[in-house]
Amino acid sequence: MRDVARGWHADGASIGLVPTMGALHAGHMSLVERARRENDRVVVSVFVNPIQFGAGEDLGAYPRSPERDLSMLRAAGVDAIYKPSVADMYPAGASTRVIVHGVTERLEGAARPGHFEGVATVVTKLFAATSADRAYFGQKDAQQVAVVMRLAADLDIGVEIRVCPIVREADGLALSSRNAYLSPSERRAAVCLSRALGLAVEAYGRGERDPGRLRAILVEAIGAEPLAKLDYAEVVDPATFSTPGSLAVLAVRIGPTRLIDNHDLKLPYPG
Ligand code: AMP
Image (cartoon, rainbow, N blue to C red; front, top):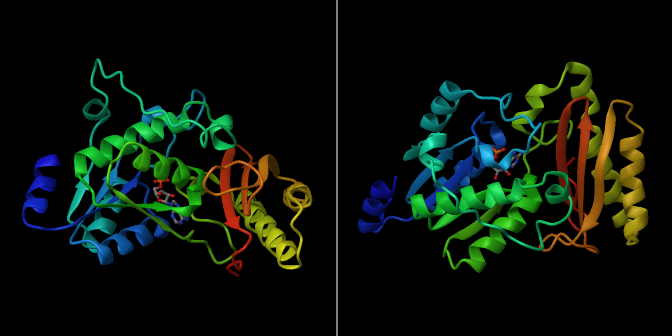
């Protein structure tokens, strides 16, 4: 990968990177399309990164669709698919980890100990391997975006981080590879996340600014769905993930499946 990237840079071509864990959907492809528009060469990495999964999480069950991914990426005209093995990424003896403080401490970081250390480490390695000029991340994983921006700035990586809007199903559910886990009744229940965010946007639009009351709207909307169990609901600052702010963030369990969603309450709600 590094040799290919060096060749491209030697030819004066710019490189856009889209990191993914595969099981691609229209959310991923929106990142690929933007990267395609803004760079001479596009690399999509496909790597289910074991070190960002905690014990008892869904690493073994994580959806994989390698053939479908390949045909989607071919059709989208990407220049390279970087698909390292676990042994390529973490050979025996590998013992370096990238730790971002502060922004990783709450919410996803608290719910998933070690998760952001795994994300920060793999993203740093992907930046190094691909020499990317720009890297594309989805707003879907809002705290991940904040972590990646922090690390790229702090480590002087010189990669420009571009954030792409959340792609949703017609009923509002944010696209996610994990939606494949949902049974039909769970899939219907899962709309409670986007519905809750919509209600908070409405309240914000009516002038509600009290973080406690905005949070209560989210909590109540999730509570109204019998199949849903709230993990967290907060209204935070999008860069630091501390309160107060205008970014409403949610993590909800629908049966065994944990889903996240978010929306900046200052922005109009799609749909
Ligand atoms: P993943 O394969 O889940 O690690 O996701 C790879 C990238 O796609 C991440 O930057 C995600 O934030 C982004 N992504 C996932 N789902 C969506 C979505 N529904 N809309 C936009 N971006 C997404």
